Amino acid sequence: MTNDMLMTIRPLLPGDWPAVSAIYIEGIATRNATFENDAPPWEEWDSAHLRDGRLVATSEGSVVGWAALSPVSGRCVYSGVAEDSVYVSAAARGIGVGRKLLETLVEESETKGFWTIQAGIFPENEASLALHTACGFRIVGVRERQGKMDDRWRDVILMERRSAAVGI
Image (tube, rainbow, N blue to C red; front, side):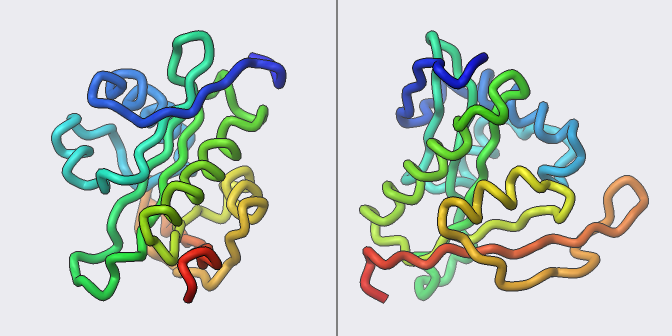
């Protein structure tokens, strides 16, 4: 894929799950995107993510990336806070797919009243750190030894983006 590819961002639909899951599995395989070891079944993924803020990037009819929001808490005081996930297929990395997805996700979240989007990113995932920084996120801390993967402790950098549009 090239930088001049025609890309469309649209809502993620249940029928997109096979492609979304395959891209998720590519991210899992890097061992720097998530603590997960496998993509869950659609029903499990669907119940863990908010209805608002589910997007796919398509090019030439194929899904090349996805982004989604998940709740950080079930408590009503956190109703405007969500955690993002952004994944891009290996073939489409580095050409702006992630940025377009995250920018659109931020815009959509603000129209739905979200005041904070947070992200937990492994320090080794330099591309995700750069993407989030470019989209207005800031580092708020490091969660040391947040989890153990492949017999080693992993830190997680916590980033957040506060919305100016929601009026906080």
